[in-house]
Image 1 (cartoon, rainbow, N blue to C red):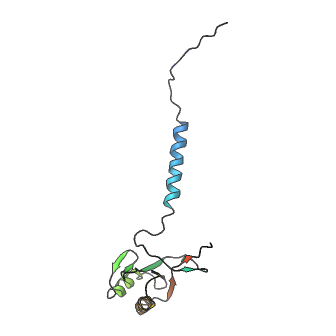
Image 2: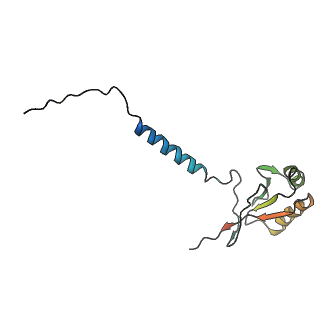
Image 3: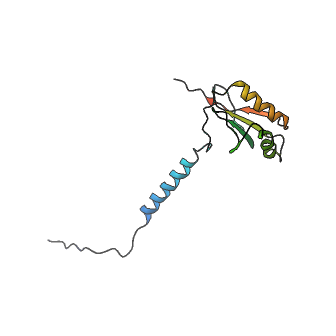
Length: 135
């Protein structure tokens, strides 16, 4: 008994596997894009065992190792820091000011930035840190 094999062309294409691949790529890109924390300024913040996150909207002042100052992502000088910070806090004076200082910045520079922030009316401060890694 011989069976005949007929090779027929499929008239339609099954999109199920293509849809699965596209959905996996979409999920991958959505998950990987959420790991981007803060674009722009690269700073090595000090490590601390205890810490908390700023849950509400905050204003970030970044002090780099070379002494450059940034309010959120805008570069400012020490003389214009007060004006830029005042403009960033116009809507709400109760906003948290996050000091994102490099670990090699002197304490004097950080205190000077906090003094300028207090002069324009900031009352809540946080210092950005990294969690300590156990080895």
